[in-house]
Length: 530
Picture 1: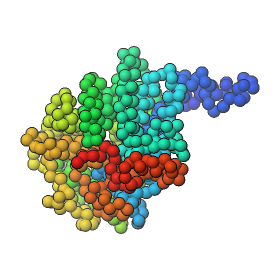
Picture 2: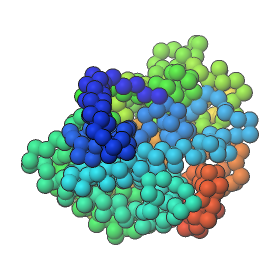
Picture 3: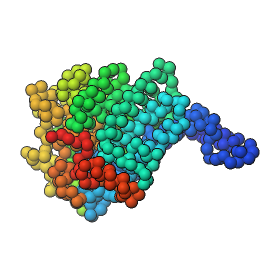
Picture 4: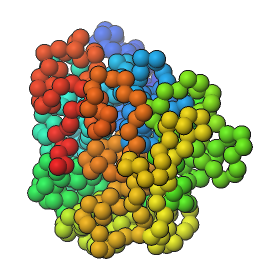
């Protein structure tokens, strides 16, 4: 659950109550009007009506509620992408941590996407015919949420959902959905650029990301376009290049500094509690991962204390951090609770200047026109990440050519250890290797990008699937029904059981569009790296 402090809420409630009361005392016609709805001519009055729908969309791209965040993000992308381990197992038969995917957990992302993103977007579109700027920002948010959805599952109902699921919700091909993202982004940015010079700030009170700043929304939209272009590089390389080069063609409309990061900051008078507080502190479950320990301790990374808290294991000296290997069989969760908790005193970030620099570094590495060299953007990405987290030492870190990810030791269960020389342990160094092969340079870019994107595990998981980097330890125990996951690791989440119960014909079509079985080892459309 997230907590809000809204100093203006009471004032708005009285305004709405007065409007409702006055609309219900004017005779028979008004007696037959829905008393719970604002009158038609007041629907857009100061955006009171639309603002609530818009705000809820912003709060659910990455869900803010602790329980929602845990099942949609923390027990999916955060563990599959190598960021977090868990202090216990939820079920002796297995759960997401051991690839026996929870039926209930799998449905959470579906429910949130259709009820809080798509349904609200449909409402905003219906009542904002005279406010194309509002529709444009809502469209960008919809794309930001939708790409996370399809990157979890594959084909989903998208073009004809009417805001909800049911027997008539037809599954659409993943490539068609992706190509629609680029059209929506282009349409939205074209619209918003017309409003920027006018100084319009219609959504100031309802926009939890940029507080109505349309220039920053255009910057985010282009950065998102760059991310999505890179996602499809192995499936549609020429289209990927075209979209990427278009996204960076006007640097004034691209995220380049931390002040333009897409951050879930809240509106004026409204603050949010980072849901990582709930999963690591209140629930005592999420902890630093073994992979994060290996990379950050091995690199002596100055961002380590900004991300995690030191170990509380008795006998550990100060400055020691302990991570949990995902997929471990844990007999006594209390023994893992003293491992490194997550830091949470910051706002969640949808997309950062650091990520944009790493995307441009990869594009330049591929020979695309990104406005600079791969090395320049690689080093700029590290510098931007250090700046974002308020830590010093970026120059020395960038110049380090010796530090490598270190071996992993589990002080509770030695069978989880990863010894030096084990092929699953990365050996990549930090300093840019100008003479390195394409794959070595790509591993450098994605490894540092992975570190910089923390804690956005959904994006880390997608990039790991797309590129194979960084090297993430395979889980210790696969209790699911797909043996492929022992080596390739999880590629997607199976569709929710509710879809087989309520939308059976269409979900079966969705599996056909997927091109494989409805299992965790079936690759998505863009997952085509040789």
